[in-house]
Image 1 (cartoon, rainbow, N blue to C red):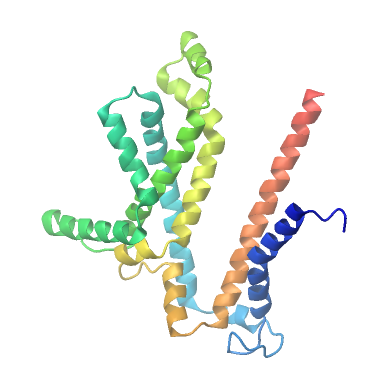
Image 2: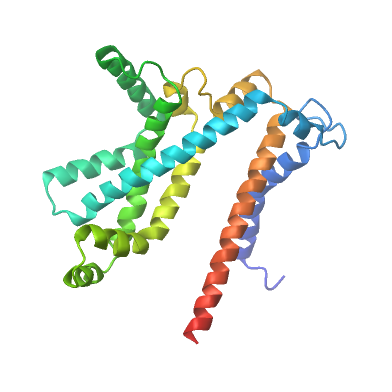
Length: 271
């Protein structure tokens, strides 16, 4: 008990508080009963029914595609915005862009979703495009608010870069474009990856904005889960959540393993 400090106790309390509900969810995903809160014995049948539910499978595929396209576009837009925020001289245009980029970070999603819905409706009445709301409009909406997160992550990395490396490359004859792709991009690659993963998670998890901007045939997974919860939670949702937890845990473990492996190789190379 002497080694049991207050910080260790708080650490274990925090871990239990975070992961105990997930553990209970995993256990109840093998519940044989149709009632989520009543244990009826061990059975993996809900996993079989989950993979036979075409609505959920279609929603998962739609969410993954939207998240992939949105995070990719968000990285492109956010990186360009980050360059303007960090490399251009201070002016009213730069200040305005910075405020516009950071606005989605503090703005409620309801306001963002409603404003995008009104924008798409007005564009459809004025230009005839988009003709209908669907996966494309959700992609635009998610790219819009995810780009703000990417811009913040990338700009923080850009402020730490040593500009003398880029200047040396240009002194040796490299153009600005070549310097950007061969020098700057590799140096900010970790922030680009972090921004992409963050955008992918935000897009995959979004419910409010997708509800405003989606249409027939573009129902995402959070929308399916939310609608099923309103009608009564199905044990299939527990099975789906368990698969998502296992997938995220596997990705996190692999990331930790490869990072640790690279760190060991770097230490050996330095010795």
